[in-house]
Length: 455
Image 1 (cartoon, rainbow, N blue to C red):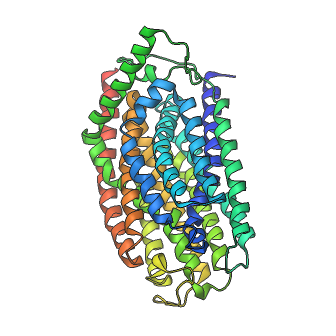
Image 2 (image 1 turned 90 degrees about the horizontal axis):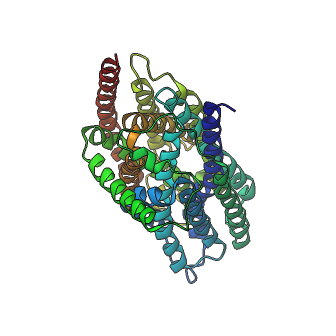
């Protein structure tokens, strides 16, 4: 197999591994608030929104050390160990206890930072300027199949059930735990790419060390070298966070964190709380996740592979994502009751500004997924393009910004009515799109300067 073929195979394996892991985790996040409401309050005192807020808060802080971890133990082992923590979090719901639930939330927050930093590193070292957009699209499309399969299972498992029993919950989460473990072990199939060149400052070479090498028998000089790598990766992350390019991208990255919270946790809960959708409202949570996944897959498969060397670059895709989300937000505002995000297990009987429609609710799910994929594929592409020699620190900063905004959103989701949550996303999305356009102009200018210097 050619070197390019090996790199493409690595991207496909990476996508499938994340697909299995997040089939479990995203499905867990989508239903956990609904499941928690069904628990006996004398046994369990927890909130899915609070758990997710803890996860993303710890996630954001842990991104400062994640590049150092990846530099020391390598991206492959980093992803595998992180995957085990994801599986442990899901397994908590088999026998739920409040202390283990929140402890697992903290641990998976740390694991998430390491996982996504390592993912960004693997994506970048298996890509070139000409393939980063294609590879981002392939990875994103495979990842988002997780929304399809996991939520399809939820739909059939809970179809026609107004109340979720303890056995229903246990069966679902045993299955999700096993699926997550399968994804973790798939990381061992990723092979070391054949390097084409060595970075001038050697930074990327440090992170490209053998994907499977943990060097348990390291000599003292090697151990000292790894410590230096860890410190260098941390310094790089701090430096990149203050660059003009990253500051410009920060608002659009923060927006993806806000809408990640909304589509992965809040919107499904809103649909499940709408009593006017009938006894199938709970199973509609799974069906909503399927339609979100369909939008994500379509967006990742099509827009992620668009030629970023066109005159307008990534801007048309991001603009399409914004318009798609604005349509979805407007329809959700009309269709879903304002108190749906914070309604009790019994649900809400309130009505918004139209007769509640399941069809409109599912259309909005599709639009949320499509718009999200537009933003994320282009952000993955531009970050990988602008920081090719510092991919791990750059993606750590990316996830730091995204996760801290998600943590804030999950926190206020415990209290804010639906229309206030939608307004926050509209304002942030509009500003984020404008700043992305500026960042794309900077990236285009850098490419032009680089091409000119190479003549």
